[in-house]
Image (cartoon, rainbow, N blue to C red):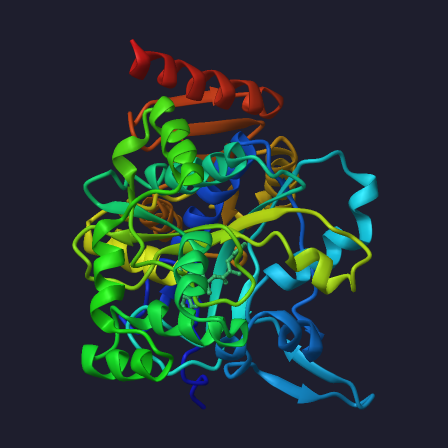
Length: 423
Ligand code: HAM
């Protein structure tokens, strides 16, 4: 039986074929995301993968609502798999904001589900790093968040030649809209057309714009002028002070598809323009108030970075890491009479923090050794009489020790080697 279209199987390396994804690469991306988010003082949170459908129909906007995996559960509740994390975060923040000093900076790596048309960079499930700052109005928070986004990509070895953050402003677009149209109900429809400008046939966009009383020419002129608002200038100056100016450009071609954005917005793209957006986000100062039915009013901002486009980009640029085995020791059991004592040593080594592999059933000594080599382990250990024989597969050195000396020996050998490499 096949998996559903738009869903992925994650296998351990080495991968069986090109049609599956690597669980090891996924860990590499998640570990990098986590460590960079923590270096910026963000704390991890999570929420339920299923939510009342209303949470999303209320505030995300029509586009994402059309993509919901929604159904009625056995208790007659209307529920939906989460297509994005922001409404859940807004709900959680509103419920518990009194317990946290403002601003609070939170991150999460949820799996999200959208019933989209499958295409390059777009699947029906993806993982998304979400980083959000709650309770801060200052553009310093926008700059902090964009710096974090940039550093997540730099930590994966992408440079300013590989990607750019296109910074824009819903406020600027709102002013543009208000100056020409006095029906606020049409604003979201207008934003949606602008959001699709680069992906849609210009004639189709122009026709839609004309329907709302706008000309394609005036829109293109506004984007081309790219006059930064005072707020955007502050954000860019802050990023420049961090040495990150090369990673951002003011670009009103970005507006964001989701309904709730209210101020500065941004999207990260590969420079060559080969892929869909790597990440997107912005300010959503009204969402928490709307979701909490006016009970809590807190400014907020954040971004989401998906794993699909990012992994495809890393692959295309040759930046996926060589995956090394994380097994330290293969314990050889060449004589079955020694299995119980070997098991005791294996248990001890694992308790001491080493990753240890061994053959669960009797196997010829040379086959076990071959397996150790295939796994790329650092050491083999075998018991011989009362002693343990440790062999380094890198240096071929052998040492004969009392079993209780094993842990210290391994620590010393590994530390010595690291010291030598650093000389
Ligand atoms: P979004 O632009 O819908 O924003 O998604 C953010 C990123 O998730 C995209 O740039 C893309 O990399 C990835 N992504 C989205 N949909 C898919 C898909 N179907 N397949 C693969 N990757 C996808 C949001 O979701 C906002 N809630 C982000 C946010 C957080 N704003 C404030 N805080």
